[in-house]
Image 1 (cartoon, rainbow, N blue to C red):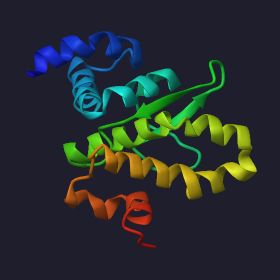
Image 2: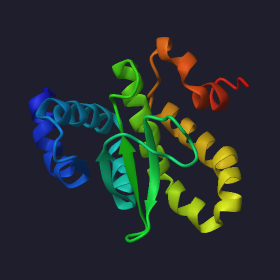
Image 3: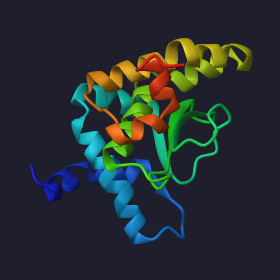
Length: 169
């Protein structure tokens, strides 16, 4: 299927989910959209349906994450709707496109399992342990099942990937 057909097919989903800064340039918006489409199209339909049940929106901006400093993406809980949202910054560092898609797929895996809501229910004392012992391993396993892998040149910079997938300390 060509990119225009894919874009038209998923345009309602993109329009509902993707939120940009008012001053974001059209070129930057297209980068976000193209990465979303490339990722979304490769996730099985049943899994996309479950993600949509749990996903409120995707903020396309710089990430400030309490648990993981200096990260290009994170999945969090919207405390109003009690659904997940993703913050994604593909302009983070100089990482390959393949790695950017892998990172977005990883966040969709967190949304699939509703990790942000589960972690929130546990409370901050237990949430960190939950993330380390359950959420991250599950998200990486699902990302691998979907066949999303980072570019080999970027693996040395992906500390969590090295820790949870490669089992390096």
